[in-house]
Image (cartoon, rainbow, N blue to C red):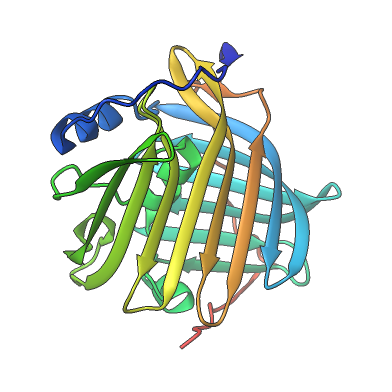
Length: 261
């Protein structure tokens, strides 16, 4: 079991300008990292105005596998097991169904490329789609450092197939100048008419590493709006090996993810 303390807000100081390499190196060295992670909490999901309150249980083996179980009013809703090249889902209400596929099949649903790394970074409170090998502009805005770029990029970090895609997108990442942790990310996919914004707050200290126990993410496209807020319980287990049970029973039938195209 981990030991944690709440990170207190510090008085704002005048921010010193630093170059992009120094800032990116500082952000990278302060990212949350572990071998194993187990956490529970509550979420509020707003899908096109329809709001649901869901409890979640997450087990993570970093850079390898992510297990998520969802429930509502003590009723199991879904269990999923994600790896870098696969998605497995058991739907447990309104008919028992299972899905076995890959992240490529989510591309046509959300109209952007999604993969394991993005979800893992969001769970850990790290900035996603930030590649230290790319070139960025740095500035100061709202008492934070801002890392930004706007150009056509190869999405190599989030592709795990033979396909290589280019997208024009605006990327902005707000960094706390005191601890170099990510506070907010905003991504606008210009050619897709899709935007994503994520925020992290209420940090706790776990073995001298900061983890946000509150996070929000918002996805907006010309068709859909999805808002999700997550609050972690303080009962977080770090670097204790976890089970990730996933079994398809005989009474489950396959389902297909429908495209939005």
